[in-house]
Amino acid sequence: MSRGTGHPANTQRARWLLPGVGLGVLLFAVGAATVFRGELAHWLFERQASQRAQFDRMAQLEPGLHVAFCGTGAPLPDPSRAESCAVVIAGEAIFVIDSGSGSTSNITLMGLPADKIQAVFLTHFHSDHIADLGNLALQRWVNGAHTTPLSVIGPTGVEQVVQGFNQAYALDQIYRPAHHGEHIVPPAGAGLAALPFQLPERTTSSSDETAITVYGDNGVSVTALRVDHDPADPAVAYRFEYAGRSVVFSGDLIVGRSAGFQAFARGADLLIIEGLQPAMLEIIERNVIARGDPNLGVIMRDVLDYHTTPEQAAELAQHAGVGALLINHVVPPVPNSILEAAFLRNAPSLFSGTVRVARDGMAVTLPLQSEEIRMQSWF
Figure (cartoon, rainbow, N blue to C red):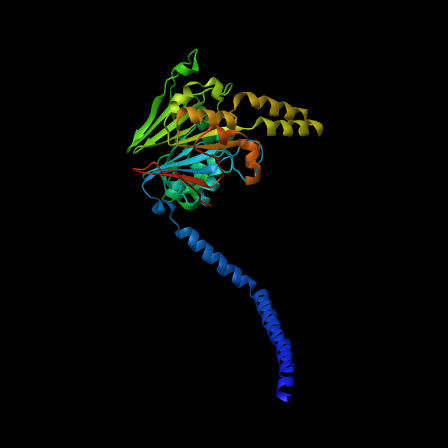
């Protein structure tokens, strides 16, 4: 009996002791972490830096055509998006489509080597498509010891854009070689070089617009088509072809006045179109007017007449017979996935393929000898 009655007491005593021991160990661990938190933080930073420095995105890619989004936003501030930018990877070649504010940092965060970029293609010259050109050229230059400037391909007018950035960065292009040495940052590799192409004269019918080849090398073919984004003219869409796979970038346009764009996009594996949702923008318009900001209210109304809605994009994608549709240049800001349904509205029901809202860090892989379209995040 004494053994039986004493056992619960001993067990209870053990229960009181064990938590005490555990609490002591925990307090010791917390104290040690507090004392040595600088060393711990240094170790964590060193590990993270080592992983980042040794990571090679290009070495992980399978053969194919790849698109990565370095900017899916527009001029309205969006904490989750940089302004317009996409990277196209075809074999070993890396190209950038537009260079909006904040987008160069995203290229690095995705593990892509800025020093390997061969050229930038500009769809038009609105500020949210060109603002990061200077930074992009700088990163390519200082990381790759290039001896030639970064090529910028675009319609007539690109010369003026390039000249302005080169002038703005002229002093910086003196400081870098003086500090690091000309063998590290050769002066001849600084800045940008404009490679303009001449579009055919505008026709009375946009359906008669003619696509022209603006790049061809190492199996990569790029064609351009004039689109309507008036008064921002010229504005173009691009189609990239590589080893049987294709992707089309609309740039900014209104599809109702760019009838030739549907034929231009026909049969593409991936169609990327800018998107503006009027129902959501009208809410912003009402609120900015109510707070006493009529100028911004007028701008919210004005932009409706030279952009494309998600529903219009989906209808065009269906008629063009493309493989998948991604909406980028998102207006108004859609900072989380919960709001995407309000942005897309009826678009998914109008296209039989995949419809997605593009996000910064999203990547699409089009493997060779396949019809597969694979999407993932590179952040």
